[in-house]
Image (cartoon, rainbow, N blue to C red):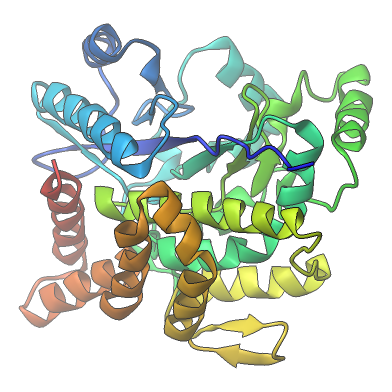
Length: 377
């Protein structure tokens, strides 16, 4: 009996920061801005934890091409409405110089509870990410594919890094966002689970105790969605360039289908100890795509370009199935041209070399991020 193929639909969520077009520092979203966006986009846009943030989510899409159309519409709306208030969105995971101490959280029950529960830790959450949902209707299949997909999370992170600066300094990391986020409870790589029932039992223990109200308070890098019949990848930094968002979504969708294909042949991806995958996660967080990751099968550190080529060959059939091979192959361009973190650093160094001081060099980085957000609209 043939195994029914899941739909592998995708949905993309992105968080943006709002900056003042003159100072280039963070600015709070006026009520009128949020109302105008919500009138146009309905429930596809929402405030985030901090008032300087805004979150969007695509519709359920069957292809990356469909996601491109919807994401461009969402990004364009936020940009157009923000401009009316002399603001601009940037899609970077950390603002290069604004201070988290000067930001205020949104006055909403969910966020007030977070403030109470997580105290000083959550105040530093001046970070933005992107999430990719992949539709898998069968719950146990979701968990089985999650266990295997976790191996590739560091690879996705390495391609996505967009947060080298924090509080006006180069951190030396390509994804400083994770350093901040990992201070929250229930974050990091997901545990290995044998079934969806095991996941539900674990969640139930915490909900029965009143520690969390539901599984939406579990913030692993990869989790079963609390709202949809999907697995949700949460590992990536948000992307300044729309096309790079689509590449990461295409990779996630195709990798998931590749792992499902293995299951149809009674095969599976080897599941390595979380300790070893965590080492690759750290390498991606620290170096992005610059220094390579550990190939745990070969037992050596392999350049990211070579790893990406191997992944493309692994998922070529799946990318062709979804019509997303071009987007998947853009991952090679990301490695060759550098992630957003590399581009931001170059803009900063160029500004210093041109005679700017640290403050103006960081402002140049923000202008660069504003330009990249709008380049594909």
